[in-house]
Image (tube, rainbow, N blue to C red; front, side, top):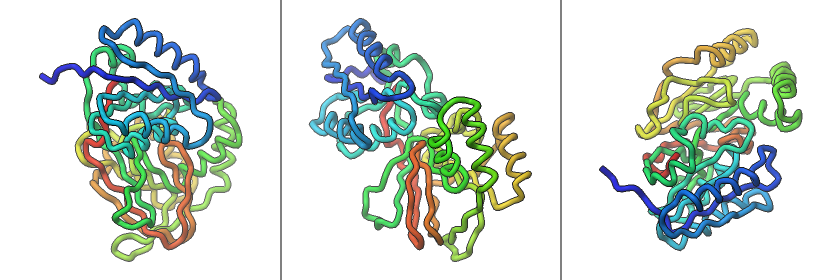
Length: 299
């Protein structure tokens, strides 16, 4: 049996302007850990001040080596920044964790096993896979990591409208309906040269996203060296609605699992990586691959 991990330092990163009261949650966790941990440890609160700051803070926290735990008090997008910073820091002893403070909190909801403070005190660290995303930068580039999913098509377009429309059940519903009414499919060129028209393409390391949708039955496969491919070929909008309803009720069932997935864009394409919207230019190769057991985590 692996012995419980202890940490030389714990860095709690949070966005003080978060809609999910991240500051209060971060300060509460700081106090809880001070009471729970029975060994000397340096616990720091690190607020972010701008987009991408969490990447810098996490990288700086771990790059000196040692047993460092970096906790992101955030939603999925904030945790994505922390994960990428830790991976850039190159410290094999570093551990990541997330305390959900966002709108969806898909990763925490899908992977959490116990209250975070108790998990840190227990020190039971496990490894999970990450997705590594390359978008036309060459095979030797480090790429960007996703802890949960990468989505193309309908997924990022809905995310953009949610940001414009605001958070809250009614506002979200209005935004989704507005987006769906004007959504158009996209085309990709597959590895065999054939073109494919899709409404949505999601490469997922977790079985759920957007609070309501169950993408697959892969709830126990976070460290199997593969991810699930959920692809919706272009279809009439009424059929897309039925598929979305199925995802929100009984789930989409078994989906293909792969260790890598590649295609080339035909037109400029937006995509969503752990809740954050980005874009890739036309005629660019895109490759998503599994990074097996790349992230040490707890909680």
